[in-house]
Image 1: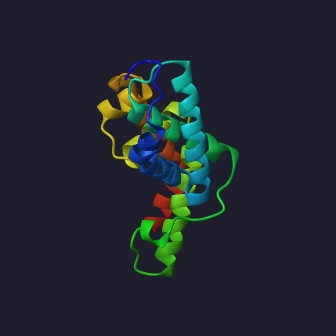
Image 2: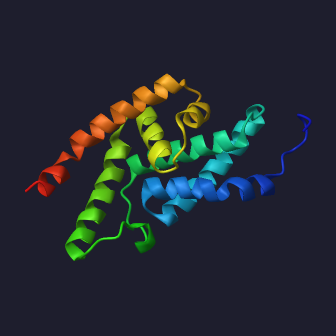
Image 3: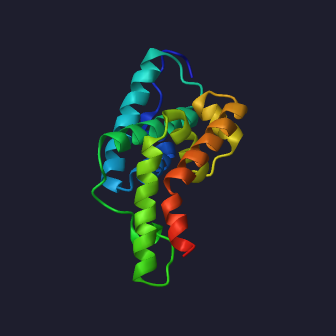
Amino acid sequence: MPEDEEPDWGRIVDEHGTRVLRIAARVLGSVHEAEDVAQDVFIEAYGLYRAGPVQSWAGLLVRLATLRAIDRRRQTRPTAHLADTDRPTTSGPFDAAVANELAERLRVEVGRLPQQQAAVFTLTYFEQLSRDEIAACLSISTEAVSAALYRARQSLMSQLSVFNQGESR
């Protein structure tokens, strides 16, 4: 596409909108907040396009969705929980309550991680991206991805250890 030609924004939104929304919803636990983040992501992507050429729309939008959702998570507390279809199957109300509490606690703790660790953890576990894909999205080396993922896991295990202690009783 020539540099002075405007990209087909309808096509870009159609191709990447669902993924952007899914990433934001998984980080935030709220479809309504995820919709706001998705709008912000596409507005920001447009501004970045205006500033210079975009190498990969998929990489840019995944990165923006992850970072903006984490930013929003740090700013606000979600008011809605994941849909029933997103919850793990449990055998009773107690198990469901524990799973809900753990999911909410995980979201909170991921939001407290340093930005790069939070982004790497989110893309690894919520989007199942490979280390190479994450490195490309975040413009870092695969070694940096591995190191950030290790530090994120260590931090989250430490913060969420109270749930493991409850299970061992």
